[in-house]
Length: 485
Image (cartoon, rainbow, N blue to C red; front, side, top):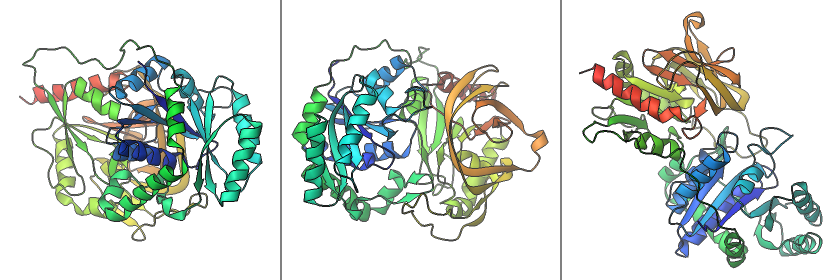
């Protein structure tokens, strides 16, 4: 398959990759192109903006969680019928799992997909030094094809011209864009990064204006013809053997299970490929809001509560007494519940939140009040408290007991990303499903609290990495349905 494609990489975190990607996706779509966004790594927030702007679900590619063949399968499946694929990198181009190889890095994905790279550099206070940076990135790994540079945070026309001439003289790489420094192109941030696209959509006109300004800035300051030339230079990829995305073959009369997926401003951290795999394994996904809906959807066999920002919406979640009772009653009736991170917090008895301080000097989204203690569902006896310490890890774990996601001995890879601490009322009697071989977990290297048919953890899993996820979740929901007849 000959798919025009390009990786947008940064020289560091906060170089402007997401802004450039959003602008490119919007500008290309305005030209009538079908565009597909991807994100390197396990971030949920950036793909939400890709999806909003492109009109197609963005997907994650991760070289630590996924084999090269699975990376290719997800890329090819997501890119069917598109005119161009734009892959946003993570952190700096070569940042990954460790210093000694490129596992988990943007560079690794670029090499797996034989994809040209456009390097976004924060040139806010440098000119000739930009050339040194570009040459360093070019020479560090000759297998990475750096095919263009976009200079971000340019202070003046003269500043941009000097930096461009330096790069093109010393590096032999074309500068295809010079984006001026503008404060009105920024999306507000909070303690885990940008505010989410789902939240921004609720704000309406003000945020739409930001998106329009980002798109217009890219249209005015990036040579889109040169960008498309880079994307079209990518060689054809051999179609991989399908390893993950198989529909389960079963009797046509076999009923599907219904999984209620919590999706609103508070909970929206889901991988599109995980949702797709649940559907392929026989689940009908029905979406609902833990903030606004008073009842669970009818006749559901399981509930899936992903991550998000329950702390920001703690007052609204707590005030929705009817939904909190619905979740508790569903749990008491041995309904299947799977919860990750934010979902884990919602299932606790209480949530204590105090707005955190600034994040490395960047402008944060302010909280509407001073926080407080809020009643949650009470499925898990204990409370969650927010700390300044931020936990960010790739994780590896092993199931130490059978649970709704698999059998004892199964291993998985995933990640954890939070500012919170779980305080259990009776820790000695809490049952954990996961032993973390890498990562912190909830307590003493253990994660995945198991109670009745509920499993709740800090670890986020991707169903294309832990391939037992979708099948076991659907099976568990189906067994619960059958046992209730």
